[in-house]
Amino acid sequence: MSATTHKIWLLAGETSGDELGAKLIKALRHFNPDLKFYGVGGTKMQEQGMEILFPMQDLAVMGLVEVLPKIHMLSNRLNQAAQDIQLKQPDVVVTIDSPGFSLRLLKKIADLHIPRVHYVAPQVWAWHESRVKKFPGLWEKLLCLLPFEKSFFAKHGLDSAFVGHPILETDVHHGNGQQFRKEHQVPETAPVLLLMPGSRRSELPKLMPVFKQTLVLLKRQLHDVVAVIPTSPLAKEHVEHTVQDWPIKPIIIHDQQDKYNAYAAANAALTKSGTTTLELALAKVPMIVTYRVNPITAMIARRMIKVPYVCMLNLLANKEVVPELLQEDCNPAHLTATLLGLLTDPQKAKAQQDAFTEIMHQLSGPNNELPSRVAAKEILGMING
Image 1 (cartoon, rainbow, N blue to C red):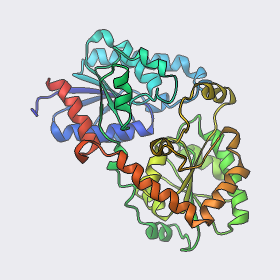
Image 2: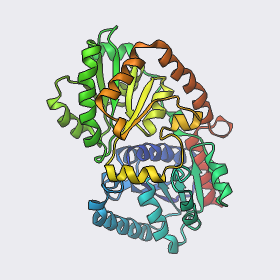
Image 3: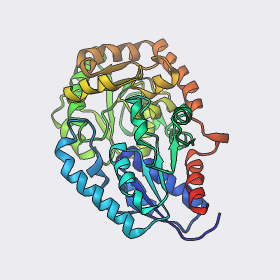
Image 4: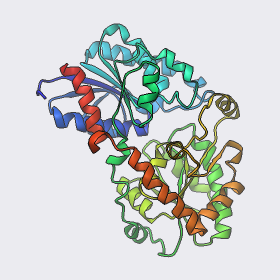
């Protein structure tokens, strides 16, 4: 590929998108070191040399009710992003996940006739399939992370490419559990439980109180259990403040390698649904998936969801490999009882771990090439024609 200088404008609206965007920038530079990057992202994309327009945190809102107070600010950010794209005139615009904001932006810049790529297919196969009708004309290329999505969108006349899942590019399964226990003074025999409440401002207040009470109940049964909360830059301050009044203090970690070491040391995890489930599966950590949103949001969601599971691992396996305790079931008593089973019954843990191996194989990209490089080739193909 030529080393001609081109401009690429990217948008990521949350932590997982920032990580995906950083990998993509690195892969794009592998093929063309002279590329210039602009847009909206987090610290990881900024570290890869992208010029940031405004803080990614402004877009990290989830839930039908939770977004209402933010509508004016989000509208302003949408206009700001569109104006910046018009000013920069990039060779291609790449929006990463965050469909609520991304798809509005893609529509808004349609008249600029700049090639548009959406990376991470909207999960309309899980919600109202009829929403697919709104997609034609929004992008020139759709990049999918999941193997079944290409055929789903083809059924609706939308061209897409399966690039593989970026989780396979991480070192999440190369942690050192002994090092973690030594550095944090965790006894060799103590069960380690990961608590993963997410990073969105709308998630943490709903899950952290439940996790607090669950830990209290669990400690009565497993006296030596040690809780660990890996946090992202978005969640660090809130998590540290929240646990100040917890009667049992969890270990809070921020460093990525420390997180991977914690995965290696962990006996189980209590996690929100989302990308973290794939991380944990790759690291072979048995888990329970939980989630809680505003009751009105939950009521609407239940009417709309068209798939039998919310956890991606269960969807890929087409069966419940991982217990899902959602909404009303996301309560301390239920979570504690299920965690006890996972922490004290080796067969339950092994059944999950065996299933994880098969699931991860499905996520490999074409020819086992790095997913980010497959995605980069698709994007550069649009620039170079």
